[in-house]
Image (cartoon, rainbow, N blue to C red; front, side):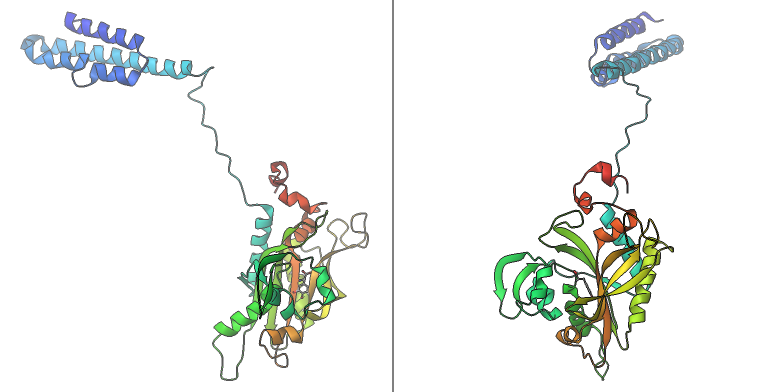
Length: 347
Ligand code: DAH
């Protein structure tokens, strides 16, 4: 090897040996004014007959230097960490989350009802007493209101709409929806409205907490208003929902009940997922209660500016957490909101 090349090679290898910053060392050798760069520039001063040999020596020195740099780089990666790093190991996968099971259920419920013509609407989470109670045939101080253990909001009341409340149920969307559809459907000369096929899904609030209640929960509310709407249509809608959400083996039944905003009113039950209606330790009777429903009360239609002589409708409102618990046989709905990943990751 040409002695000049040999000298530059030894110098470079010594630099690499003691280097703590291989990038800086690389520049000291191959950068502008670097040891190797200066040496390579001398090729023009070499006699023509020796140039080829000089070039070969340069190439061999260059590859030795590059290899030494490569080894140095790898050794630094290992020694900088406390232990051994396998640089060929695949990287750590980012943990990807998924939708909360309440959100998953909402998507599923919306999917089922949109198939039969309902459309999702959204109404205020803090609403007037008028929409939450009074327009639903529950006048001020009516004892029926006690069932909705309501949070009132400290805010100025309206002379027309009363106090503001955290919506205790999604039924506040009923009269609002009638007003919306009346405003936006182009009216025929005879003043026809609708039909209304609303699905209102929202957070609701009540002063209650135990295995089947949380102070914040979700409801989904359906409202269908048209001419000649009948109870069999209501039952058919629930059967469609039940088959799609709970599976084909489970069926619904209507049980007489009372709500101020429907007449007649029902509780909707679905057969228990464990015994399928026979009766077992979990359900006792074979049936589990889904939620309330009924034919919209004429006073509610009137409050929404719809003529009860011409139109009728049905409505229902069910808790989402309770509906999920009935599908998955969960014993305590407070689990939904404890943010325990061991629970949430199972869904
Ligand atoms: N709003 C009622 C509740 O929270 C449920 C309900 C019952 C909604 C009957 C309705 C209905 O639309 O028709 O308990």
